[in-house]
Length: 137
Image 1 (tube, one colour):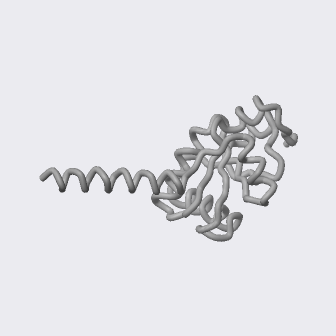
Image 2 (cartoon, rainbow, N blue to C red):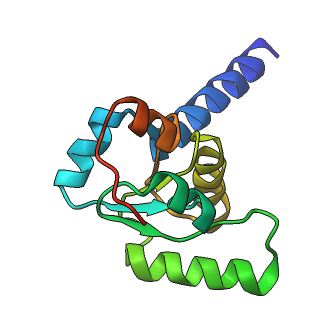
């Protein structure tokens, strides 16, 4: 019985650890490094927020609304795949404070089988707080 319990605990630790490696939070400096490598960056905020703060240079604007269902979600996913080009390719999601991007990263990994989804920890707010360049929208 103890061996079975130990096995189950080890399995869940391993599974959660490998899951965390496929959805990863980036700090601002790390995002800059990824930008230099040409990784696709996708801003999932809405147009009002883009206009209010601007956007991170070289990011694509693709609003994600988690209340959208069926065809809208399919359309959003279709556009995402066209931007990323391959489900095995790393890309970065950007939201206002990082929470929505984190949730979406987990969803894309778990449900849609993307293998490397990154997100900016603290979102655009952390980028602005670090006094990094924004482009007016």
